[in-house]
Image (cartoon, rainbow, N blue to C red):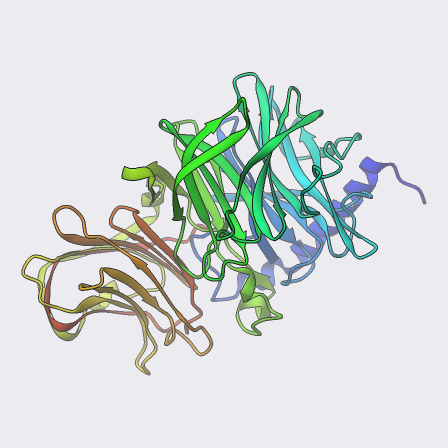
Amino acid sequence: MLYDHHTFHNLMLAKAEQSAANMNDHVGKDPLRLKFHFMPPAYWMNDPNGLIYYRGEYHMFYQFHPYSAEWGPMHWGHAKSKDLVHWEHLPIALAPSEVYDLDQKGGCFSGSAVDDNGILTLIYTGTIMKEGRVIQTQCLASSTDSVTFQKYVGNPVISVPPEGSSSDFRDPKVWKHEDKWYMVVGSSKDGKGRALLYRSNDLYVWEYVSVLAESDGTMGTMWECPDIFQLGDRYVLMFSPMGMGEKKASYLTGSLDYSSGKFTWDYCGEVDCGFEYYAPQSFLDDNGRRIIIGWLNAWDWMPWFKSFGPTKANWCGAMSLPRKVELDTGGRLKFLPVEQLQTLRKEHYVVENVLVEEGRRPVPKEMNGDCLEIMVKFSLEDCDAEEFGLRLRCSEDGKETLISYDVNSKVLRFDRSRSDSFSEGVRTCTLETTANGLVALQIFVDTTCIEIYANEGRSVMSNNIYPDPASTGIDIFCRGGKVKMLSLNVWKLESIWR
């Protein structure tokens, strides 16, 4: 039977929707499911896509494989929220259905969303394999009800990469400046990552402008999920570099010349120093805040590298908490959890003015848990300790996750080598103390994730762990002397899922 394009897309969407729905109840019973981080109903999720504040609600789309807990032909999942915290799942927005996106090794890859005179419009990368080569094109889909999307009959709107760039040509981020649309696309040349700039009057006809920016050979082989936005009088170019080892999400700050299409930077930093944070995307909300959300995972985690984790329970992947991006001194950024997360707070416990000496000091047992917000402040005045910090998700058999600060090297350290039976490794980042000599940590503990915001978001770490649900203890510790803990605030957090 022959179907027209729209009908066939609807059939593929219905099939995908049914597959995810069939697994939803089973997945929901898994005790390792996150309580206040966004997850799909079931199966595999990666990059956030199409983040937008539209008609009074936040919309989040995401890379979704609705047939297994491993990567497969990419669909776009969809959810919306009134507060950035509680999310309502909506029908799948995009499924592979056309000659430019229907492929077992391809699909509807990452992209963005814009409000085109009231029409919610998605811009994504169609990906197929042809004679062993990847073919990536930029495509459009739109909706009049913000739920059901139709692919543009004239897709793709950009059918080939510019001359000289590689076939890696994906992840369009679109924005409007004055009266024109602009698009930045991730690419590479000669094994060096780059971002390409396009311009359009109407979203449908695009003109290639320039190489917006490219690596000098030290910033990865391919720039995935590029995003450029303005903060104050500066511009930020954010991307996820391939081939950079531990570095998962980087940013450059500088200036953008729209006439020449060139971005010039003078500062390079990391969005997140943890194990799991990839493909962050930004958007502007109705309060003028620049907010980012990232994927709480990393490609080297995938099942063909590591045979552990929640894939056994038919789900894999979650989103980070939404973070507000602000410009700090010298072109540096800081990332703060959005204020709306405070609505999750329930029981509150406080300990103040405690001198922590060599060894471990358990906190009151009512502070223990696997779904917490922790705010702790240490003073370096009169501190003679070499190292201090917290042990989280502790168990009686010695399991623990370590967050520590080395006073001499000024390094914040996350150690998950004793978190469970399979996680491994240590992540570190430099953390200068605040002007008044404090080390202040805001930590969100969810069932299988820990997000750390240090010294008002100047350093951030996101990491996954898979401890036994019964491992809920908290200790404060100190090594080589003593340190004063000015305050420890702990809130139990409620689940966003019913």
